[in-house]
Image 1 (cartoon, each protein chain N blue to C red):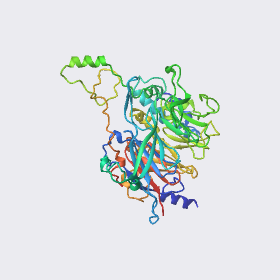
Image 2 (image 1 turned 90 degrees about the vertical axis):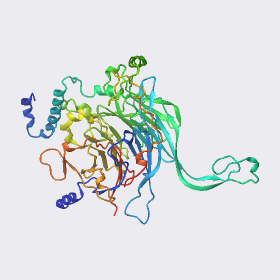
Image 3 (image 1 turned 90 degrees about the horizontal axis):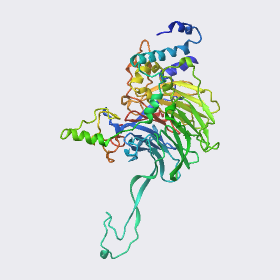
Image 4 (image 1 turned 180 degrees about the vertical axis):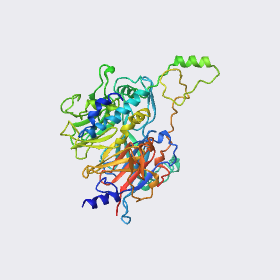
Length: 457
Length: 116
């Protein structure tokens, strides 16, 4: 039994979701190595059905891909994602009063659940959140009495008969329009937005404050967390991420640069400065080093779909917390422990401040996060197996199974392994997303978007 | 590293796995302190919080700018070097240094010319 198990692992890679075989599906973006700053992908998000996939970039643009409907005949793969809509969400701004340059980079995109024919999403840069409506137009009225087909007005004296304009089909046009602009509520830089399960409100979090908005109301928002000290000299930690609970509309969490997560209940008080729960793993003081606090800073926090767990990402690991247990995580996965002996150079090249995100699969059984050298990692919570894969154009034949990668931390490097010193730290995978229902993942390298699927026989 | 003598006991059975984890991190810390002796005693993080909060701050003094322009007369004002993040100091920002308002018509490469 054991032998069979390990042979299986040898051929198919060490797990990562019930022995899913991940295959290349598509890659979007330019091939050239000279990356324009505007093209750097800054966020990736599937919508609630998984049919749409949105990306945001440093240039303030949003690109939405739509999965084509499955061709009944071609059952060997799921539908491909093609461009559905693209628009400029945010522009660069300059705040003259504060001498502050405001980047147009899209920090986060969050989809609203679909209520009617149109799709809605929230996109945010450092200061302003926008609600975008994406709607389809596939027919247009024709046969006006006073206008020509091209829009020019007809001379009324030439009109001799009356007709009723009718709708005729036209080529599908997808239009994006900003429906709400939520501005001027953040002094510091917005790092997170999260839509409440009531689908009426959402929160936005910056370094020191969290605000609650109503989706219909743009001229006011409620401050629900404020950790700004009276004296800025006493500042010791900042808010790094925040998220609403998927089911309890009164509950949200926020993570800090010191590695703590606070769970707050909005029913307790208007200002949730006092947490209901504080999640923190105790640290052995003798282990502390100059780097301890920096690498403990949480870069992302995500609730499981069930709402029972939450996952946090710090520089070297992914931790799963049971909401009922505050004193330590229930699971810890090492993403790239071999970097612990490289912290000095990672500090010097600023990589130690890279903010990696993490995500759950639809059934909460596997979690995924990115690393360097365009590697990304998956951890199967049930089998406890993990896998390292690479997003690279070298494997870009559709339905090619990805080969597991391995980093050699020390000692003799085996064939096909890569040594830590050969890793390219400029190739970082910060943003990944998992389809809510299927085994389809979107992985963003610096300026390319890869889509992988599990092998469909 | 100093204090190795006191670390000897850490190599005993049981604890080795955990304790081995400290040594790489501490070694890295020693490396860093050797390179930058002036690095504060504050744990790494606090200085960065302030830097993080100040991201995007660009100071411009119209008086300095006009004085520099007058001094230079016909000569070109020094333009920003590779580091456009100079907040204060000798560099006087010029209109050329300000980020160009990007054309909204430039479509993302993700949306065009897909390479499969």
